[in-house]
Length: 469
Image (cartoon, rainbow, N blue to C red; front, side, top):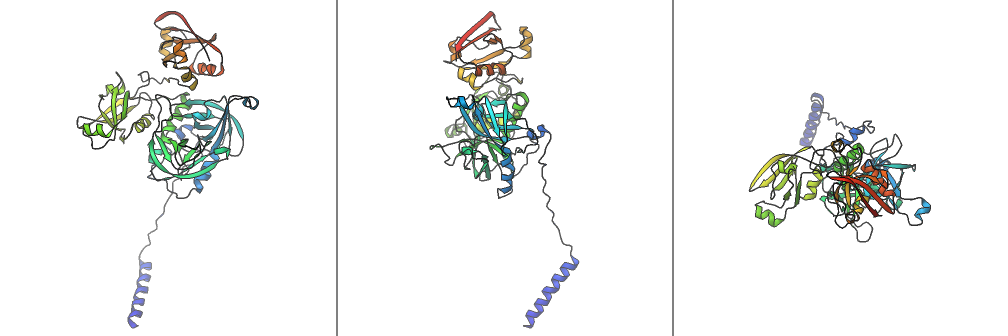
């Protein structure tokens, strides 16, 4: 009893002495927040607002949902009025994400590609007619603009920081249900599901198990901080409804594409100049690589950036800009963030050794000019690709305006006219053609007989081609 009393007195005295003579340590945690109102549009798209972290911090979804739902809109695309639609005119519907306070909206190309009248319905039920700023079928992205101000919007997050197993939210308008929020985890990254039927399509999707249904396309994938980390695009389904596999375009790729569409009306893709394939287990073993990670080069285009950088057929590309390359979709996603003229660091494997080189990316014409080859659906349906004339071509030809045919698909409507690549379209149905934008718009609006007038740079005289649409 006496011993217990003595022990209690000693413990109490120790606590009193500690509190009196020792200074308590105070830990202050400051949370840095980005202002929700950013005036500079460039700041929204240049990546400076992206944070770098291993995973998003909150473990609940309340604040993220509050941020995201006001910034996600309903989009209706039609090619006729309501009376005409009853007669078979098409309607499409989906979602979009407001990315700036003055009304720029990101969505999927497939949501609006067949529409001539685009209606945007905000979360507060206001309706606006939207202008199509640009479309990119190779990434299935599009940019719209509505005339409004002081709108709620989402800031692009850093999709590279997403971790498999991390919580994410999908926000959209499935079945025309306003601003529906579902939750899931990141199931995988760099997924290729072969839905973009185009030669230069980039598929490196974020796969989640968040419930995504028809109408969610073009909506937001956000982390638990409420940052936009992806644009919801597709589902894999056998029933036509949600079955647990949904896919989103990574924000870092979407940000570059949206910026290009905003600045130029088209996307400027930087190409390495190679044809490549995923590395198989057998090929990796033959080459002496410990694992089938990397991209096997099967062809290098002459005078391309890769050719001039010393990359050869048979090499295995291991890293670009220091980022490990495991599959072809991953490589295409990384390269899709760059423009012609940009220099990238490429690490590759050859004959048991690893090398690093610098390569200057080029465009489809194998130059560093910011020239966009148009691949709008109306063009690919007819079977050709076009671009605006370069200033140097206009000076050399002594003509203003015109659209140059870059490629023609075998067996297509255009191929049957006997037109050849290099043809310069100067008139369509007797109306002067001055730009690719104008040509695409006229083709979309014209049915029946279409008559091209133009010329070839190396052949004398005018040439005419006709077909029906």
